Length: 177
Image (spheres, rainbow, N blue to C red):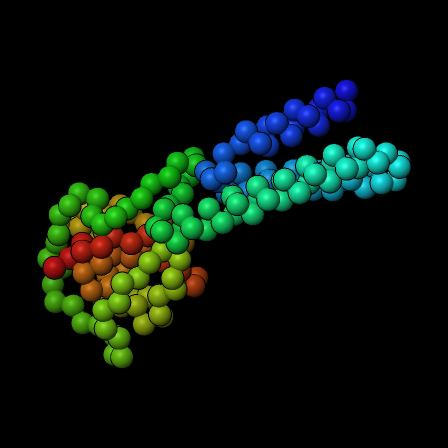
């Protein structure tokens, strides 16, 4: 019975897609690796060489799958893919509605100029407050910020940043003129 379960688990891991859809898949991959390690220890203790060899191969495959999923997950985040609650993926390559807004004259903080910020970058503290905060994002066709984040204007772009460290969570390019 144990061989059957392992065979089914092995087939399921091979049939799984290589690209991670959510961070939950990475957690599942880690759980599989930990389970494989436990089985390997049990096989070593019991002295079952054939079972040990099969479980070692399965552990190697699960580690490879985890590395691939993690690499895909990081690449997607670097490319600007966003993962929202519910696991769906959305990508914003500019304005959601295609409109541009006049938000008045803009002045960069002293010592800064225009730079294209991407998701995952850390915005300098000079941009976190004052006249750079977008107090009413709905006026500019931007959704409200999620908890522990706020929208800031950086030149023509609108950036959603995390409050505690300034990490850029979302970028809307050319929102303002």
